[in-house]
Image (cartoon, rainbow, N blue to C red):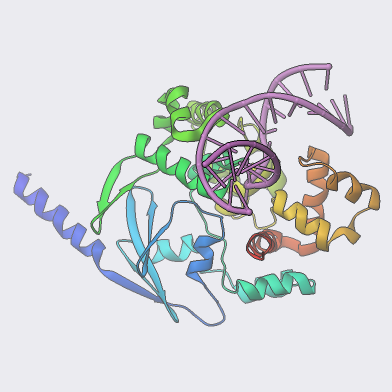
Length: 310
DNA sequence: CAAGTGCCTTTATC
DNA sequence: AGATAAAGGCACT
């Protein structure tokens, strides 16, 4: 094939992808782009002017919400619907999780927040890096990681960096990872990346497993405890019954749901900062039983509400 | 501005 | 089993 022909073909494809598209949002399927990207479930989005810029896979794209429509460029409609969870009937989910006045208030406050379907590999590494860090620091760490080990791509006049592959991170030196701001988590990331490469781990296979089984699998990775596993299951593998319990959810439980536990238990967990696995499981199980199969949705609303209230 | 506290916790050890 | 400590470093007060 002559070289000229190939170049022309590439250019044609590129042009086609750049075409701006719009998805009309149905009113029974509420959506709020800003809240969805700001609530702390994802760390690599940036708002520049009207547009949100994101990187997924090897591509950067941008999107914005205009009343009843979601506009996007450099990405296809099917991906957008899948990634932003637009195919789920959010109103129905609300009716299932709205068990009391408090959760109703949280839902009202962030009406249209959707759980994303992120890439499981990126999600796993992100949450290993996120342990015991604040969100700003998590963002910075993940940017450092992408700058050092990802590919630079250019879109719309800006530079972006793809999320590093498992192969790339498996080859990284622990010191290089430390330099990205990972601290003691560096060895967990290095080990996890090696394990994923070595056994050719297929994250998508976890989708077919029941929540408990899928969680057990994730717990095999170093740096992954119950909380991280629950986050990965919820934010990337469609396990909406997962109910991650972090310090904020613990506070919510102490303040608003204490009556669902024994006085003894409440006393115990309010007097110390970290949770044992047994204590975690108790609160996790409460969340799943009380809110039902979309407990993870309830969790995200409660989490964001508690964090932003003050 | 210094110093203290807290962060979407996990792991190691006793 | 259950308690306790240690582990980057940044952000916020």
